[in-house]
Image 1 (cartoon, helix red, strand yellow):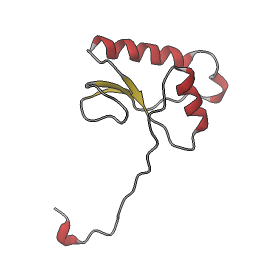
Image 2 (cartoon, helix red, strand yellow):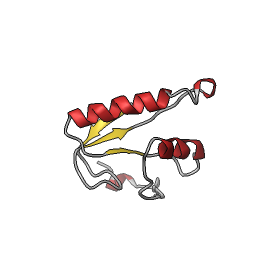
Image 3 (cartoon, one colour):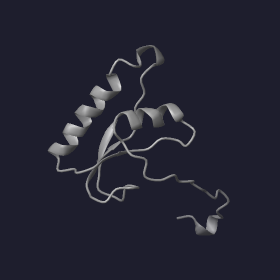
Length: 94
């Protein structure tokens, strides 16, 4: 799945950006060019919509996805740790 993003996209300098929201190829179908063909189509789609950059993300421990991104020509731009706080009181909720 891909989207055109107009908000800030980590590691990008321009807007809008075509963003790969997720990609998965079942193990038995890998190494056949499926992900490459899909990403090529997404890149062309983004270019036709005036995007200068193609971005994506993956979890820090998903080394297979990181290898796929590198093989497709993506450069790693940063590593991020996300936080959350669940103990918000009713007084602060809207």
